[in-house]
Length: 257
Ligand code: NDP
Ligand code: 8X3
Image 1 (cartoon, rainbow, N blue to C red):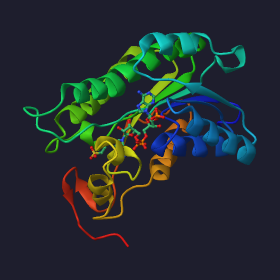
Image 2 (image 1 turned 90 degrees about the vertical axis):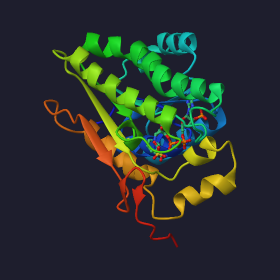
Image 3 (image 1 turned 45 degrees about the vertical axis):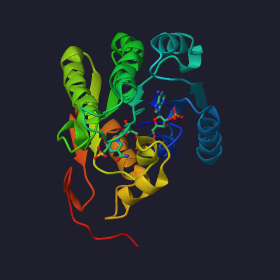
Image 4 (image 1 turned 135 degrees about the vertical axis):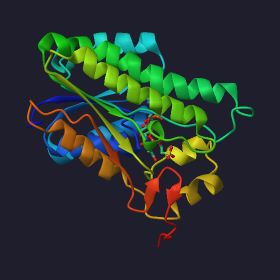
């Protein structure tokens, strides 16, 4: 079903985005892989070309930069211009501070990436989908878009915004054959916590030690499921949690070997 389709993945240099690239390449989709770290993205791209015989196109892109997003999408070579599937995955959290103590710039970075970045990319890609009357936008939300946890304030707000935007997109796309889904993970082991704590491994590593977290591939396979339903089926949203995480801060501390 995905053979020779074109999938654009933002945040494809690591974690869930990289895992989506693997799952979609395995199914024969050609891939536009976007992230800021070109070297990492190129390594992913070369591996997938060799492993699965697909074509890739690497974009060095900061989704916060609206003008760069527009120009990059506009300037896509003709053979890459007709994007079939957009996976809006690029995102991050910064800190776990109380609102009365947090850093303004952390808020800017989270809102600019998780909300505005997702909007810039969608705004650039969706007109082509609507014109061709074919496509699928899959947004990576979070359990943090459904519940709020201590210190989660603004990160949770950005994921609540993703939830609202996803619902709004579906309404806006009604009447077209363009689908829109969100996949909302619980705790996934990735670079996410190291980014949240700005490289402080002592704070980041324990996040994944109490119980077996989800792995990026678990989310990638869920995204793939959404993208491979028959055309008359649209998966609105999927919440995927680790078995030991019943709610955003209700978990069973089983320990991990
Ligand atoms: P990672 O930190 O492992 O990966 C994040 C990816 O986003 C990287 O490829 C990074 O690439 C990219 N990225 C970050 N900022 C930008 C930017 N400004 N422009 C372009 N790319 C950017 O985290 P995850 O894989 O875990 O996170 C992916 C998504 O999943 C995020 O939206 C996150 O909120 C969400 N999520 C994560 C969960 C978790 O527990 N890990 C749970 C629920 C949702 P680069 O630095 O090269 O630009
Ligand atoms: C990331 C999951 O619970 O750390 O969205 O916010 S959580």
